[in-house]
Length: 136
Image (cartoon, rainbow, N blue to C red; front, side):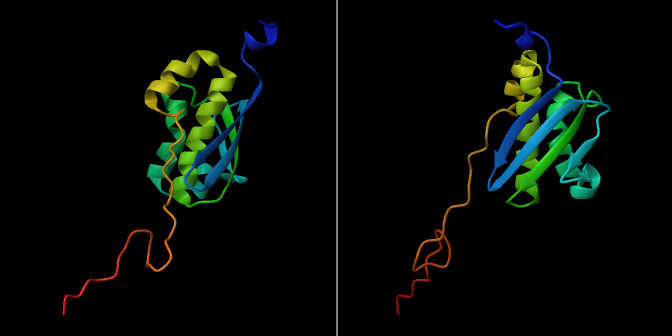
């Protein structure tokens, strides 16, 4: 094993995905500032639930004030983007420090949520909705 992999890295990157959203996360040593698309966390995600989702991997590893997080996210909606950011932060934390793997894995932050919207079928209103049946 090379000496670079034994101690933590200064900058770590992680890609997170959820639904149609993709988040590219850059983690650097700092004071705990979270920036998403060049805006602060509370401005980009005004809902407290979404802010909590984004902070979950940092809180689980007790590293809320150790790292600055810079995120570029696109696609999907607010909830999908928040989930993608959480996934990306978890992957970046893992790259930063391999010893956090057990904590992140047991909390389920490293697993990509593969649920996607089912595509609409032709001749129907939605993916599974049928037209009302009339006997007479």
